[in-house]
Image 1: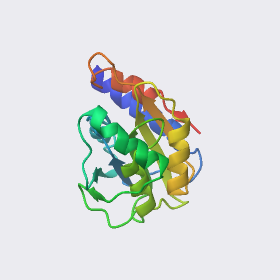
Image 2: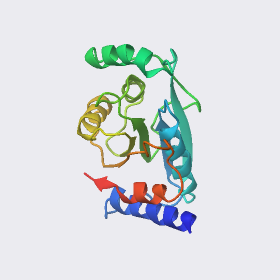
Image 3: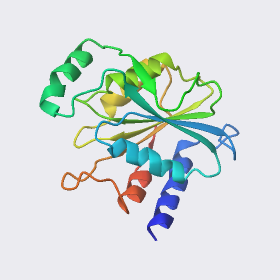
Image 4: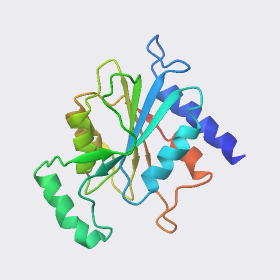
Length: 193
């Protein structure tokens, strides 16, 4: 039952994500899922999203800061705030090598919201790997309380590409987990731009 709800959610994602014309993705098209995850919530969503995309050639890669962030939020905050204020781009690495984005029909970016903005690793990835105008750009966001407006603006600024669609999930503050039936709700909450 949970898997069925998840798969229905993925279908709903593509119903909103893809235009109703000839530009829609087709079976075996290539999709890149690139994500940054400090607390593993965004990583879990990326891994579960890939399970619902069995008709496509999907590549999953994690965006990693070469200079890791502290796991302690109090210690991490000054660095993150400084990066936000200065629009800092940082050295990144990818867990699965991607030479460029030209081979992909769609790019899905997974990100948390940090102080209302995209984290520096996301901005750095988009700056290093520009999304082409003929590609689809989707964003999946994890956030406790923030609204997506600013982060979507950040992504469009650094990718120089309009976000075709986004979805946002607010993980449970009690468990911090994004599991089970919550996935289908997350996928169904996609908003097309």
